[in-house]
Amino acid sequence: MPELAEVERARRAWDPGRGRRVEEVFARGDKRIFRALDIASLVRGLLGQRLCDAEAHGKQLMFRFGAQSFLGVHLGMSGELRTAAAVHVPERHDHLVLRLAGLSLVLRDPRLFGRVTFGYGRPPEFWRTRPPAITSSEFRPGLVRDVCRRRRASPIKAILLDQSVFPGVGNWMADEILWRARIHPRRAGGDLDEAEVRRLWREVRAVARGALRWIAEQGVDPPATWLFQHRWTDGGTCPRSGRRLVRETIGGRTTCWSPGRQRDPGRPRDGDS
DNA sequence: GGAGATGTTTCAAG
DNA sequence: GCTTGAAACATCTC
Image (tube, rainbow, N blue to C red; front, side, top):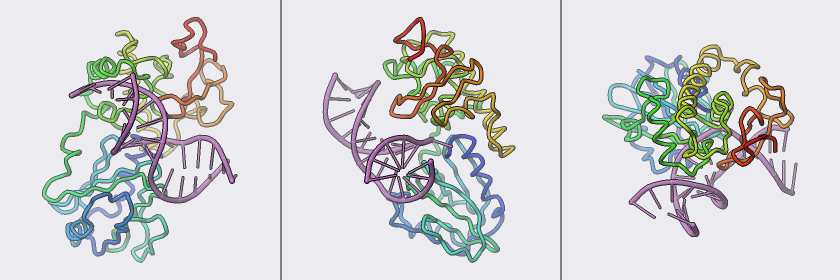
């Protein structure tokens, strides 16, 4: 599920626990979401501390407990945050449950592609060195130009998934961005001209803002004018051209685009395949 | 039963 | 040394 806006929505899911102290920590420490994390110090660092702050950055989440304890969560492919009753009995895929006064904070992740990190005294390294948010004014066109130059042989679809430049952009957002910018997902980064780089930069921001508005703030899917509504299954049509959408694997991920609107680099006259 | 899934990491090859 | 693409991770759903 989780890209930029879904992660922002997850950030808010634990809000009911704000200001309350952790009374008990349940963790399935053998699960890979904890990687090399020392569960004993996680428990020690959280017990008795109040949930004070929750921040999202790209696909990363950081929850601060007390002044010193920083709990990082990456939801991977199937992670979810929710609250449950204080007496909640962890279900099969509930790998971390924090019992506070009156409710429990639950991290569920069936596929176990998520990751939990913990920092005491200061946030973990990745959080301190995170790249500019794509919604911030520091996210400038030059960053897009640089990564396209550096990864000049990679398809632009794969480049957009680079979290060190486009934090929060995932598979559906990348397709949405390219569709709006009228750039074929298989175009090589080094092949984009200055105007295309500029369009890409602009649409990264537009899709990020729109996704946050619909998904995180209003809690609904983006409207039918977005590719989002049409891309998931075979047989969809482009909401702008009315033509049949194409789905293929690019950069190892299912990719959907609108032929004609996004011209195929191998077929300069007609993008239909 | 098989394929595929909104993600990252690792590793071998160029 | 850098870049690239494929495989691996674990489970569920269609």
